[in-house]
Image (tube, rainbow, N blue to C red; front, side, top):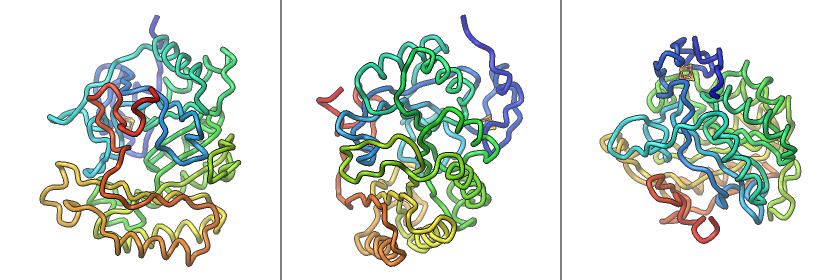
Length: 317
Ligand code: SF4
């Protein structure tokens, strides 16, 4: 039997606060109705070492997204339409529980809910059932940083680990990329709430021999031609949380089809740009930092139309 979640009736689950009735089949900016769509479930070895460890993180990739950055690296599942989009599968709460429980039984280090905000009522119910079924793995909230701050305390009742992005410190860049100049203040408020609820990532073992049990790790993806934005993000995070804030600097940007005609977003990140960002990380004295190598190829750029979307996971799934 399917469940009914009243939050979907006049949906305000994310900072867009569309107010649409998703139970009646309407979709807001996130592109999703009240039917929970999942694009992929499986162990993932491409997260930071304290998250992926040696056995992988149990990822559950949800379809749709409320941020809608035009450069999205997961565009196949974050956008509802377009030739490049993968459809995902609609799962009832019962089917979702059965599939995630089976994933938990595969000896992964944690359960990692990717782009979760717009399906929070389903995920809350899922977490309740998993704990009832004696699943003791840490639960992980993995999102864009664009979260409704008032939602965070109730999410933190179930989530042990938060893995938010912090994409933009420059309001004008946020408006250009995802249509909301308020991203920086929204992301900062929700990050403060996460840190208050769960503290910093613990343990934060750079080798991944001891995987994290709780806390916050912030990610920042470096964008082509946007070094000043990255420097502002780093300064802002340092001012707000200090040098012990666990931080992951990511180089994996690749231009997507929607980046054509959008200036420097149509190219990759240059070595000199990435080096300037890394220099600022060092100058600010961040102590718990993961820096992704800048490489021409990445094994963790997903193709959700393949059975195993991440080439780097093949052979382990
Ligand atoms: S989750 Fe979707 S429908 Fe709800 S407020 Fe956000 S964008 Fe709108």
